[in-house]
Length: 416
Ligand SMILES: [Zn+2]
Image (cartoon, rainbow, N blue to C red):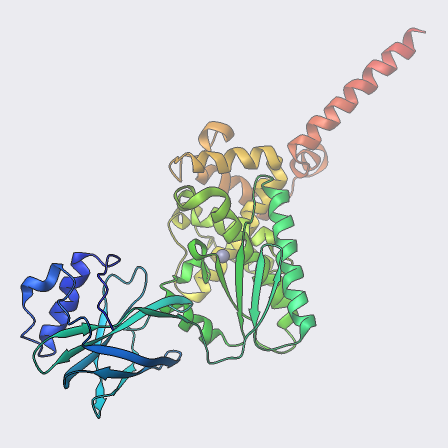
């Protein structure tokens, strides 16, 4: 086996590797070697066969059978993953100077993110202090606790392990409908690709999201990776959850892929969540009652406080989602696709969360929220005022146009 010169790893990573080796007692490896590929005997160690296995969220096992000219004193496995920022090194057990076994117990720090590509290689130090390094191998770190089925349909790749083909079809149908509903709201929105991972247990989704560094606010999607995590527990409510979760998460991903990371980050949380809520085919059935109770109790949350993030406690979060959904629905109904598009655009241009509506709506976010609350929760006026309050302005304009036409027709006919 030769020791290929590595070009893929930077000097900084080597420094880390060698610092790790020093900790493991390989003091004979000088720090001066830290920026170059280690010196190695050309024919010192040859790999005959090597393999890896793993139990997701539990352990890695590496085993290599090798041929060495000299007795090997210490041998290690190194592994790393893209974006991990460092390599991990573990010393293994040597058997008869021909087999190396390495067991690695995985914890929060040394575990790659789920669904990532892991690179690994071996390093042997012989009795003369010479270092021999193997080629680099890799594997895909999947959640192998389950036997996944997969299906590809348009931009969607679905992975699931419970349920039949009908179940998978229902999920994909909900995903497609989510795309259509977002396009009705924002005609320019597109989805290029999405990977949907469906679990039964929400605890699994929490685990994967935590390991992937996905925040709770992101709704268990990793938009940069095009990954959506869904928890659909079996039982009576499952089909409703499909209709709620799937289009909602697809909507977030569509927004990300249509806007790009920078503009996506400019969407206030209430707008992002409110848009996603419009994609849902089934929503929180108690949302209306929740909003009415909060309004009656002066307990509505100021939307201006929901710009950066949503509250962490479950009750406030539920109210925040209900408000965002209702408010965005109201804006779209009241100001139409064009008016709503202008507001979204103001935010995408980087306008201040509170002031963004000012230019096109003549009032700030607090003003718009007051208008929404008045329309939804204040006693309705009677007579002509009720009609004016209840009818969106485009309808009013259309009606005014119809009245004008009628007026002209009547005048013309009156002349006869
Ligand atoms: Zn969401």
